[in-house]
Amino acid sequence: MRMNNIKSSDYIKNVPNDFIISNNKNYIKNNQVSNQINNLDDKKTLDNNEDLANGLLLALKNKKDLFTNPDDKLIAKNEIFKKYTIQDLESIKSNEISKKEFYNLFNSILYNNFYDIYDILKDRSSDFEYSINDGKISNLGYQKDSISFYANIKSLDRIIEKMKRKNKTNLSEITDIVRGRIDCKDIYQALEIYNKLKNSLNLKNKELIEEDNMIINPRTDYMGRIHLLIKDRETGGIFELQIGSKNITDFIEKGILIDYGIKEKINNNGTITYVQDTFKSNIHDLCYKSLNKILDPNSHYYEKYKSIIPKLQQLKQEYVEIQKEIFQSEKDFSFEQRKNELNERINNYVLKVQDTFKYIDKNDIEAILS
Amino acid sequence: MKIRVAVKDKDNNIVYYEDFFIKDRTEIPEISSIVSDKIIELEKKYPYPDYEVEQNIAFEIPNNLNKNEI
Image (tube, rainbow over all chains, first blue to last red; front, side):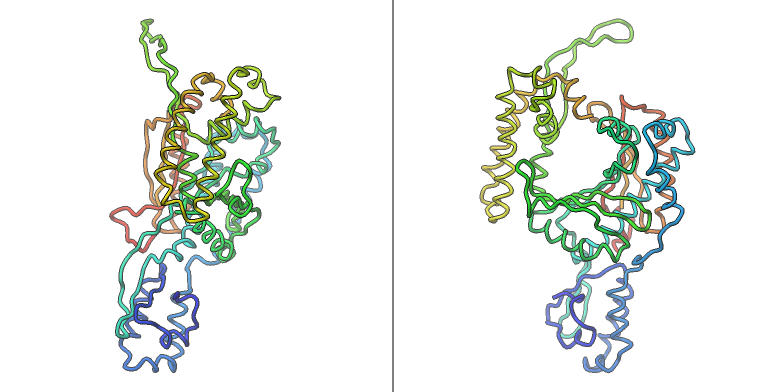
């Protein structure tokens, strides 16, 4: 039973012996109120003590950073940068003041979103738990949650590359400059977090402007994730957030090392040494991003790798099948039982990917992924 | 909240990193500025595309930080 769901006047009347509530930054405040409650002779006194009941409710509900004011300077800067073209961005690279302003803006958007979204997630995780035994509230301590949340921003060089590659006219067309990901234990937890964010973002001065729920509506070759575009009203920036199952993420981001054998390396002094030529990547970059490009009959790669196209098609198909199996096993709660079998299948798949990709030029993969 | 500014080489090996922490929301403007300076400094020292400077943030509680803070 969560404190958030009950009215203040019902609070003491309804508490079970093992009552647990989630806490927030106002931990000390809550504790002070808890002590006052513990010191009451009779629980009924609380019903007549509106101030105390309201204080308790306020302490639990009140988040200090709710409705923080929009930062007009950052919003104005963001509006200016949004109109920047590739040429404008190239000019920033050689101008330290503009470059600093640019990074400063996007850092602020990143940290602000991360801070607030974490705060929303923290509520559901029961970071601080209380137990009521014999009418006494006592602090139980800190509990870690089973989700991980991380985020980053694209570098200026990467942004320029993407704009060129996708023929974008100005910066506002790139929505994943500031992006983050929440890995959950399964698709059900991902849906729970999605609902939590949907209901709480507004309280953090944020707005959900776009969503692609691939748990409810899976694509044929990509599933188990929810992509959200969140507008931060405090900074004016956009935050791209992906929420998904950790099991699917672990599969698609599994590291792959392609071994191209020994190559000659000419040193500065003219001598030659022999080094192992390798390429580090992951399943998603190779079997989704790269293969989508190579398997496109209109791309020049299709002609270049014609002799191994059937093998590459098989790799793509198996990539989709494994994802589907993980997704389905989470849906019907059989993942734990099938875990070993799926891991074995993934390990065999990695060997096939390594074996096939060594016939694809490293420079081509780099060009596709850049 | 931990911010890791890292430099990666072409093979994705981390050749340098430095961590920054935000304990309270009020520190965001200051840390944004410090990290921006650090990125600019590292981009000069480790030019793209041979190297890439990136930052990742994650929730982490350093030992000296109160658990009640982010």
